[in-house]
Image (cartoon, rainbow, N blue to C red; front, side):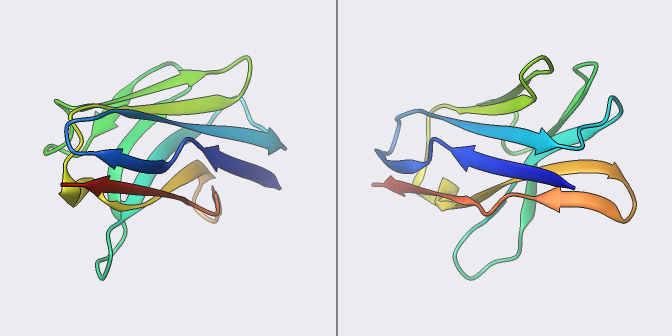
Length: 116
């Protein structure tokens, strides 16, 4: 089992920045993909970014210029730096830990609200 705890969400004005953190604990593997997904109000969950243990990243095309994912393997923490936030970035942001199909975990989510 892997436990994920997100932090750093909140209310911010458009144009502002937030940094989300996700701490993983439990049966952490040396082979894992961690990432962030989000679910805007009334919409489906969507990819924000993922990062491998070696630092390889993948971003949603529309977000790569404003968001940066990073990872501290020693602390088992993944970060999401979000800059130039827009009202459409308002969503619940979820941390994801993926080892293999059927061995995947989600955090409870953290709310990010961007006011105009």
